[in-house]
Image (tube, rainbow over all chains, first blue to last red; front, side):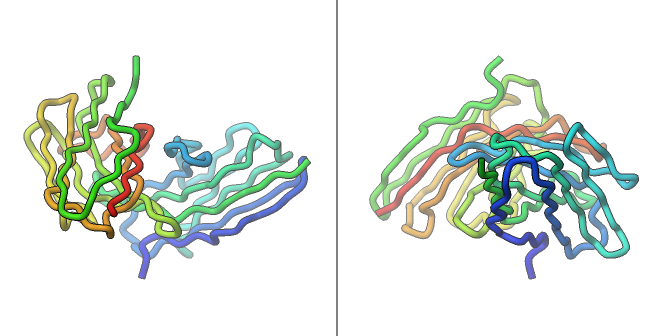
Length: 110
Length: 118
């Protein structure tokens, strides 16, 4: 069983739409959670960390549900530039072990 | 400030050849990592180095060796390349260091090396 599971998509949405991605993780000992963004043929870059209380950064909102072992990412008012693959990342108590989901692809259409 | 740099950007090898992928970071980070990314598989950790002088295996270490040359540099070696090692290889670094779990630690990635083994 994979440590981190994501719906691969693609999610095809029009500009201005709201879109949500979920990610589940298998190890209840997981301590840190992140969303990374990866553009085509580029390296992953941190989008945001995910805190227990949930957090927001502009149009992006991340939530953590420890009881159900999932994290979510909500993007409001989608822009063409949001088109990318979004990677869910989980870190266990050993801070050097980061587990990546296979990514969810988002296409924002004009 | 270049961040994380990797060389080469592209490489084609024949089965059985060897090569070393180079990685360097200028952020004074303690931890460095090597990942491979295959279609539909996400990034998988090959090896990591929590600090200068230490290295540990990740999820998929077979067929690879690493060397943490100094705090800045972390190389990945394929001794006898196989077609199954065709992949995109990313090096990353983070501030985290032994004894302290930095819950918001960020990994910074290099641009990647696209390796094809024929």
